[in-house]
Structure formats: structure tokens, C-alpha cells
Image 1 (cartoon, rainbow, N blue to C red):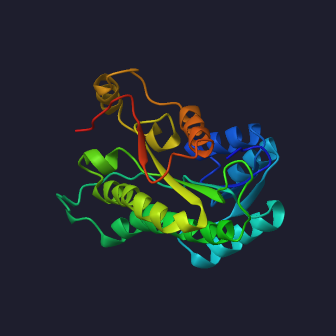
Image 2: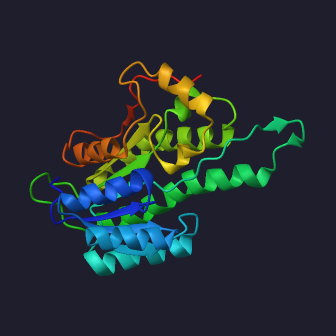
Length: 252
């Protein structure tokens, strides 16, 4: 599918991987709607790229429906959806103070997994009502953000790891289910990228992780994630798969 002229929805589009994706899609001619809870940053990025910012807690069905409708009213039904909304919190399930609060686990899973599914179901409904595009006969592309943590399971982030593993697990069955509507579904599993989510990591951990990356020995740049989004959108045979972009890193 070509990107120029297409409507796109990016959750978490005000920072990190989402902001890079919003900027890149806009540069390629997409009409971008940023769905986010951080409205100051969302409005700033939207103004920069000529898009719109819509307040949305992805966990809420009501806010999700309203946000997707606002994007549709402004730009037409989304043909491209990229889910980047997320948070990163590390804590042990059991430490010297006892078991971690269940509410913490629920929050992480709801933001990443439930939030992703929520937006997926809403944009898929819009895409299914569209006519197929002329060049590829598809109606839309859904791209979700998993993580290599969902495969490698580093300790101290059980909730995050589990949610990201579930996002990867959703990819193939969702692609199969939506294939009758000519909608593709893909996921990207980033390694460690230079975003605010990793800015607070201890320097010794940063050094250890950098040393463990086979090549290139650096953290990923968000623009590399955005270019992977472009590749997925413009390559019709990419469907039902999760792509790792991690420099060969395997977390321990």
C-alpha cells in the first residue's frame, strides 16, 4: 500500500517510537492522527507535522471509540494504524517488602495488551468498511508494538514481558481473522531503543546491554522503527508476523 494520501492513526504518537512514526508517515504524505494522553506533547508533534492530536486513554472503550471517530471525521477512515502507546516499569514480583501490588500488574497489561486490542478492533471496523486500494487490493494495515522482552523474558519486568508476548501472540490469529477483509496485521519487536522509556535505566545496565548487542553496538534509533513501519505498509506480503529489530540482542 502506498502511504501518500492515506489516513493514519498512531497511539502514543507524541514521544519515542510513536513520535518518530508520526513524523515519518507525515513526511511520506500520510494524514496522521496522534492518539495520546500527553496532550501538550501530542499537540506539539501534531502541529509540527500538520496532523491532529486526540486525547485517548487506550484502555477505555469510550475514549477509544471517540478518538477513532475524531480521526475519521478529520481525515477519513484510517488505512494505517500503529500502536505504540505504552509504559515501562520494572519491579520484582516478590521483594523484601512482599508481593507486588496486583494493581501494578493490571495497569501494565491493560495499557499494552488491552489498549492495543481496543484500538485494533476499532480501526479494523473502519478499515473493513473501506473500498480496497487500487494498487494492492487491501483495505488497511495494522502494526502493533511487541518487544524482544516478550521472547527473552529478562527478570524484573514480568508484567511488561507478558503483555508484549501476548501482543506478538495476537498477530497471526488476528491476521488470519482479518484476511477476509483484506486487512494485514504485523507486529514489531524492538530491542533497546533511545526513548524516554529507557532514559532512567542505570548506567551499568546500559553498558551491559550495549556490550551484549552483537552489531551495531548501540541502542536503536526511533527513526529505524519508523522506517520498519514504512517497509511493512509498502510490502503487501508482510502479514501475520512479528519482526525483531534488535541488532541480534538476546536479553538475559
